[in-house]
Length: 71
Image 1 (cartoon, rainbow, N blue to C red):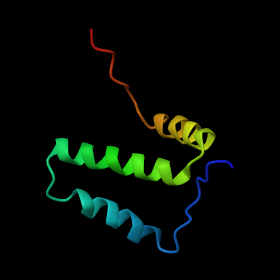
Image 2 (cartoon, rainbow, N blue to C red):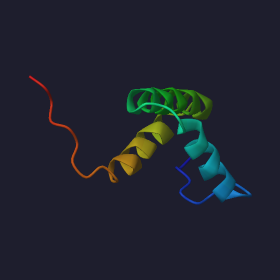
Image 3 (cartoon, rainbow, N blue to C red):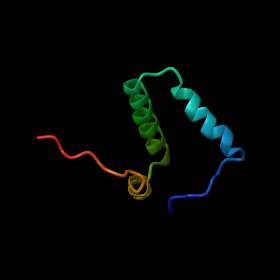
Image 4 (cartoon, helix red, strand yellow):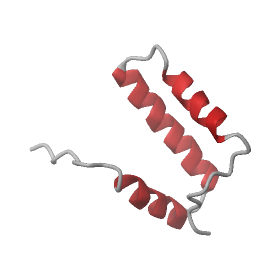
């Protein structure tokens, strides 16, 4: 199975709004925690390591400057 990059939602704006609203009122730290938890829940739902690997690759393309490892 390949990663789908086209919307699978009948109402994609509603999906986006739901995610944005879930973060409303959260601190930056709590927002990052929510994102991490959501990623893990959805990765488990996908259940395919190759699809997960491809999704990570696609997502990392949007990261302008990954943090340097801390020493």
